[in-house]
Image (tube, rainbow, N blue to C red; front, side, top):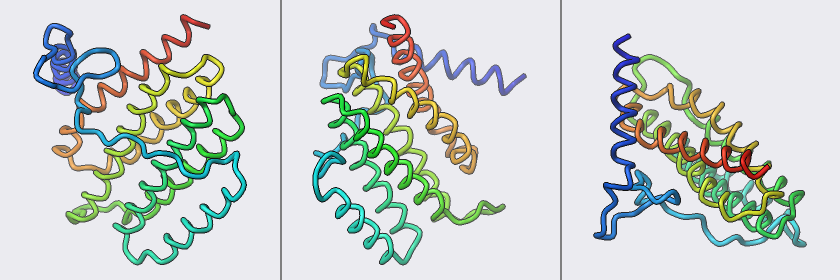
Amino acid sequence: MKSHSLHNVLTACFLLVSSPALRLDSGQAVAGHGFVTTFGDIEWLPEPGRTPDTVGYQLDSWSEAGQLWLATTARQVVDLSLGFAREKLAEAEAMLTVQDIAAARIALEHYWYYIDRAEQALPQAADGQDEETIALVETLTTHLLEHQYILTIIHTDLSVESRDILREVFTTAQQRYPRIADRLPRKKRGALFFKEEEVRWSVEMAIREDEEQG
């Protein structure tokens, strides 16, 4: 009961912070919905390089595989995998923008492959995780939240035909996120609460928009 009440209080705080009445005019970052956002310092997606619809796309996969093969620590694997994952999201955005759904699916398949690689690189969960393990889990959870948030912003600029694939990504991400985030110590997980709530809200709004337009 206490845990549930605390969640309600924190959710109310999130909605208060997100109120349009609290929008700032001093350069405060705002989300696509016009509210103050917890993702003000987010790094946007890079420019896409080769995309799945171009000749030589497989060469990128070979290069990425080679870099991962040379990685010798969990940190190196996680950082490389998340970097490649961001590139795949950029490729997916480019393909969805031109409504090449097949190519977008290829990019997203590679995206999930690299998220898998990052998760697999995490040391096995155990009592008394060391600081480096906790830092790696925190890195992965933070990136997953940022990726979902970015996709909700991209979603608003896409045609209705291109949006269905993003709903699949949202569903998969929200199913997988708790499994990883639950490995964080309570205080670390609590620090992500407002980001988690903003992502949940943004995803719900994106899906609602689809339903209303569909």
